[in-house]
Length: 261
Image (tube, rainbow, N blue to C red):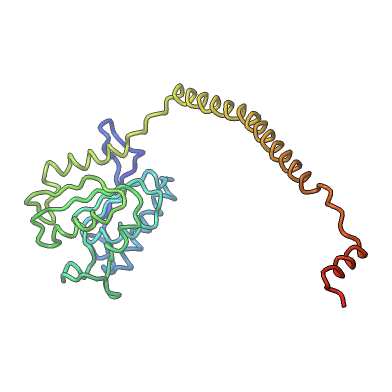
């Protein structure tokens, strides 16, 4: 029931961490105090602050390691650290109540609600679990891995129990591979390709800009033609009207047609 901190600043030639910080939670091992949920959260917070304040280790160089009940404080802290390097979950639990009963929902009185917090962990997560674990069933580790944002290839140790996974050779190999993958640096971009792309973009932009005045000229000619056609139509409309009949002519016309009496 412990949590170890692996700092990427202390890597050997093989990519394995040469310096770890390990401690026992309150009420476990040689640690005094009572084993309560609040105390374990305070314990991991104290260890984290020690790394930050006393050793000046940035979050980007910290890997949290939580085993069994220790997965609760580990996931809780990881869900609140967006720049964390990675997390390792060793025989983790979905929640405290789910270890005892196969419940499908989270109740308010449940403890270590890992299943509800794992989705807030933004860094890569490695899950290790034994298939013959009779304390915390392997289904806990599998469900947590399925809910991870950044999944790393998990390790399901066939025949592994709850407290003997360190004895399996694949355990060290897989953990070493995981830490080494985090230490790999991204390849530097090719400056020649970037320059070529920039030149292509600039040429395309210049060509587009040079075509715009021509298009504008075409549009102006079209608008002139349409204006001239309008003027031509207006001339036909404004043609002089035929002379109208005078009032005397109208009276004569009415008398002839017997319209006046």
